[in-house]
Image (tube, rainbow, N blue to C red; front, side):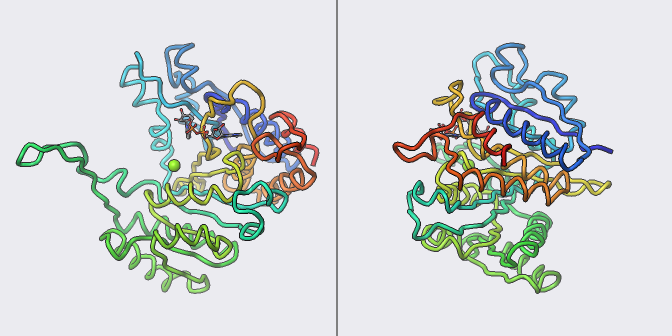
Length: 362
Ligand code: NAI
Ligand code: MG
């Protein structure tokens, strides 16, 4: 059956960049003859204001049948007057939960053409090509118990528990090892095994899986704080970085700085395979709705377009189409195509749609 693709532009620059990703996706669908059914539906705070639903019933129904969601961004929820029920059913967190996502992939590549744009300058940059696999279903963001409670003396304390079970670690690690095997064959597993119990278990489980199934991949263990330093000092050493929910959140944002702009960074989040072998997935730029530039037609659409490339790779199963699209982005940048966020003073600047044109042309 064709792949059901649901497109949710959302708020702010979300719809602007997603429109360009969708143009490119349709182009690649036709060119590579990919079996996809694409539908586009309303979602977000603007939808809430217009219809009284954050996620209208027809969007809920489309989420149920979607294999892949191409998502833009939403503003932080406008809590005024929004019933808690609507918020709970329609939030991005609940969308992620419904899709059963457990691995968040964040590739970070530096483009030679953008060396001068980077805050680090060419020295450490050209040639960074790494990918985070962040475990998305467990860890301190989900551990129970949680809450703000009072101790015996009546003082308040905030409580979160950091819990990982073996199956969650194995599932993420197996995915990351397989990904590394298809790339440069190096996996760096990042934890705080020295001070965290779940981290100690993490290291044991990853080591055992390496011995059992992935001896051909090189495995390095690294403490999370060292990883933060190495991402600054020597980012080219990394191929695939496997880490938990909390460290993945922080370290992938830290690494995002390497690329030069948030407007360049895609992501993919995947579920475990269903009985038919397909994974459900959510593709979205790392950036948010950027209210400061929304409505001006100047946002960089490359993060959204590169997220569509991830969709071609992981959901449409076409590595050829994905790689071709990524090459087109690199070619556009090498030919000097720049949106405002990646332009040097004095350089000619393209708007959102013109950057979409520049990629399509290549
Ligand atoms: P943001 O990512 O929206 O913007 C941060 C800065 O980067 C801004 O100066 C913005 O103009 C710039 N920027 C972001 N994407 C860009 C692009 N494609 N092209 C050019 N410049 C770009 O993060 P911020 O400002 O912290 O949050 C704004 C809103 O977005 C908030 O309401 C936040 O809750 C929401 N948000 C939503 C996310 C999502 O839907 N997954 C993720 C992060 C934030
Ligand atoms: Mg984050």
